[in-house]
Image 1 (cartoon, helix red, strand yellow):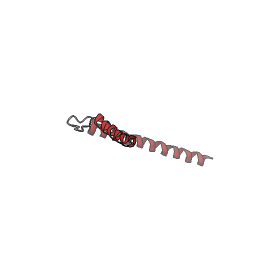
Image 2 (cartoon, helix red, strand yellow; image 1 turned 135 degrees about the vertical axis):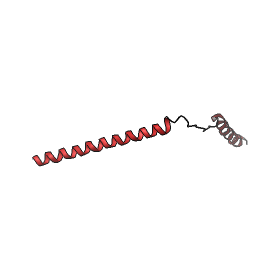
Image 3 (cartoon, one colour; image 1 turned 90 degrees about the horizontal axis):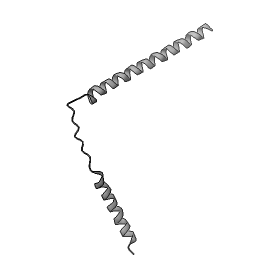
Image 4 (cartoon, one colour; image 1 turned 45 degrees about the horizontal axis):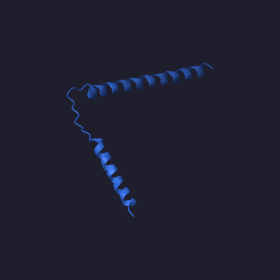
Length: 73
């Protein structure tokens, strides 16, 4: 009975150690991302998106073309 308890305690200690190491690793990853991406004052983001109404108007125009093509006898 004592051997089983010792094995269970060892397994739980190893699981807890693994979880602590995983949390520390994730914490360091978060710090690295924060340092490189969020706190970088010189970072410039030049991504410009198109106006969505232009694409929607093109889609509506295409639908209207097919509607007119099908509706004409």
